Image (tube, rainbow, N blue to C red; front, side, top):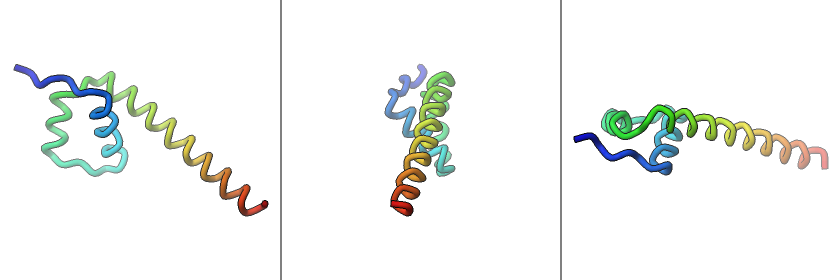
Length: 68
């Protein structure tokens, strides 16, 4: 019997920890059994976009504070 599919929160959690490069072998093996590749791709794209937007916001705030 296969493991139940992961919900979106578990997918985003797995992608977040993967972005940081911090993964336990047991967590990785659990993710492989539960996550569908399409879920990982979508969560990775969303995570990447949020990361870039956060960097843009931080730079905008710092520049505005430094010049204002």
